[in-house]
Image (cartoon, rainbow, N blue to C red):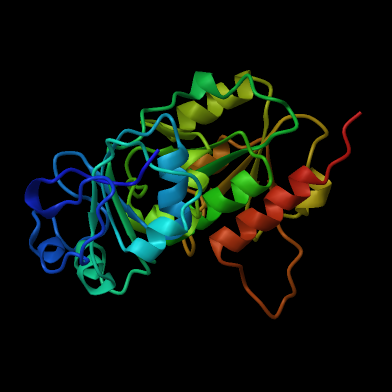
Length: 276
């Protein structure tokens, strides 16, 4: 299959290689921003994020802006009818957040379909669930997604409010994990934790003031790891919906870790457990 667009509006037909387009990218509706492109669309950028989205059969794509070099470095070929507009890097920079590392690729697509909690609670009990309480920084959430996918978590659960939307910034930090890790967004996080418990998961909240270490608190069975926002930590109501609180054994000279680093360590500890 070939990589091409159509002949209208400056796009290239198949088999034709002209000069790279310039100027139009920055003047398009929904130009520079955080990753939203209007009418419900999401704009993704960066090699890993865009390539993963293109390879995701559950993702509906609209249009790709790219340099020729970046297109050549993609894994596999684009469908013959895929809309591509070739542009130079300076033009692509106008389509994304300021100073965002687009790496020559900007993809406009529809958001992923909703995932429901019931869809993930029957997963392999060795695969943990990550629950985030009001972690709002898209860089942190994306990094946590990347670690969760790396350590074979079955899902990430966030509140629908007080959590970042699907965006280019989050997808770039997730480095492709957004496309493969189920993301459950719920209205009531406390109620979701009750459902997680009913499904047989032991809920461990990470808290610096806890007496037990995570290694001491981890069960042999299904586990949900609950993390709160940096600074404030978990809300009291969410703490009350945990079966245990645990801390990471960090040195006393450091008060805490970045939430994404803490999540990565906790996920490793969960993955390293020995199951009967």
